[in-house]
Length: 247
Image (tube, rainbow, N blue to C red; front, side, top):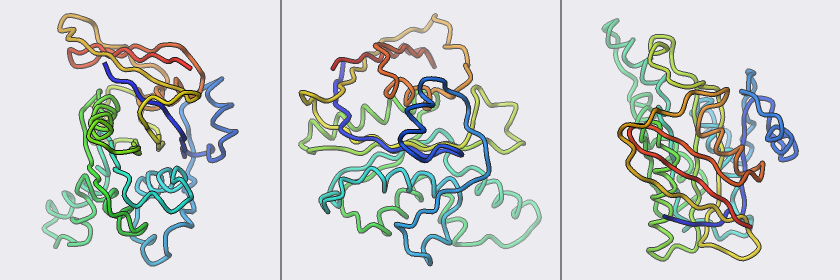
């Protein structure tokens, strides 16, 4: 089991940019819809031009979750997404099929850690960062990584989770709703007076996977944080994950 406190959070999705909007959403959740894109005013315009919508959402959430005291440049970062910027990868594959030259910039920005790297460069982040994907357990894996960094001595870790709709060609493989969203949590070791989450896990090879709901699991987990619910269970890929809360 791991435990950690959430000392701050930030999130962005179409129609949900204010903290008060997210708190209201947690009481009556729904899949975010819309075409709006975060302004991302924290990033210089020349750098901002290179960032696609998914990257803007992730970086916006990460920027909003900075501590505002200039101490974040060494805070470890865990960026997590099931599919990353798969739309950009599809554009590159389409160019290959059409025997067109590949954009070196496009290729560089299609790798899974590109969004984390863009954030790091733009914000002068000099600490450890990593980007991961772990299927239906992506968020749990990200929090396990963060817990390990805390044990290794990090005073806090920021976890950034972000997703977007799959391209139409992959739609038949979708196993949960896939709206645009991004959120960031600032994690520390359990701290008195702060919401503290616990995560337990066990092998469950014969258990039925959690049925898809109206929200993707990663977004439902953010709802769990905001709503104050005491527990959440998630079964996926032969593993049972149990989230709990105290404080």
